[in-house]
Amino acid sequence: MTMLRDILTIFFLAFTLLLLLTAMVSLFLGVPYVPSKRRVIDALLEYVPKKNNLKVYDLGCGNGKILFQLEKKKGIIGTGYELAPLVFMFAILQKWLRRSKVKLRYANFFHQNLSDADIILCYLTPGILEKLGKKLQNECKKGTLIISHTFKIPGLNPKHIQERDMAKKLPTLYIYEI
Image (tube, rainbow, N blue to C red; front, side, top):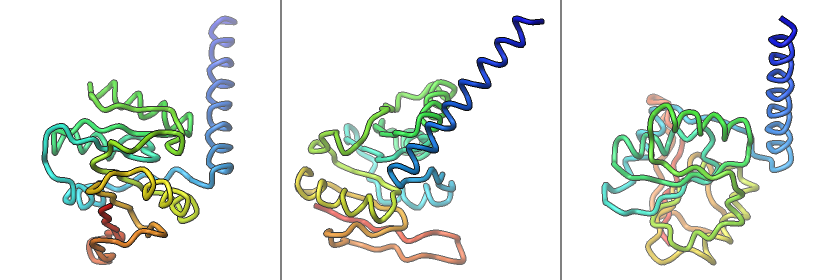
């Protein structure tokens, strides 16, 4: 009985530490974890062409849901970057349960080279997008498609804007091409 109590205590402490680290990352970076609804993911994926060998990056991928749907519906194996420890662990668990080939990286996407990207997906806050806009302009190759959920990327001009649809409960999507 004592051993079980010790194991549960360790598990509780580890979980609490991960939760605290996740909250600190969110506060420090100013990017809270906000999962996307399935209908929003479906609308976003309409802009992704169904082609083999596309390099797709999801910046701040959260639980990986967009990448898993991308794999399921388009057959595209994307790469996601996430910094919140608990959310990242949940994404890894989802990947394992789904037997997915999606690539998940516990890394800051600002420290990654995105120059080979064909498509970049993001659902980030305006402050982060301002910094990201400069990185995308400097790094991305001509023709890179960028889809931003809800917020405009400062410094980039959208190729298309899918306006917010209150009836379908869809947010604004900003579509860019470098």
